[in-house]
Image (cartoon, rainbow, N blue to C red; front, side):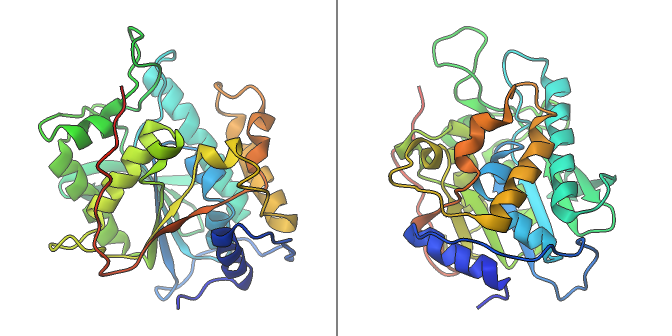
Length: 312
């Protein structure tokens, strides 16, 4: 079994069964550099804020434990009604502020361009810690299916459904097709060498989740496979909007210290995001975090993507 904080282990176990847990923890020291024997965690999400809303307090616990924390944003997170790069940059600033708060250190970052399967990606490393954010700037889905100027599918979905589709990152970096994008993600996994991987739900479309959430999860899972199609690194899937929208099935299960931390971290993010005029719009998620029952994939388990994922 991997070494985790006791509180986090209890939270995860109860989360899987929908149990309740009142967290109590002392204020931790600021997260600082750790040795090469530290646990490494790798989270793949579609947009800046999916990690904060759906995977916290798990990621925050990793940060405060001093683990090596990688978070990959698989789209730029832009929307059709705002200038793409300026808005994407605002969301990046929000993510950086959030992780600085999680780590308890100044919001100071070092930009590092890194190459994964020949593709240069922008990465930011939080100074004095082992937190790294990775940005693909692939076009996000935004808007309705039949509205001119909107794109309800996005590049991740299009790559999944058309092997020849070419995604053009909004920051002008080299384009991807499905094979090269998956190979890039696999290279990130190889480089990070995580103990385990987090994604959103690869069957989220069955719960009316965002198309990017499901697409990102499937593509990350595709990258997390061996040549024989089996799971390579342990991967755990987290539920999205349904947790907010169905409180009867998903009651609060995060309390005390970690709930307070989740709120404080979220408050650092949302003030940078002009699409969010009131952070309490997402207050239903402050006390909730759910892994998807039956969607924890251990090494060697075959990976079979859903065959019913369609949008528009």
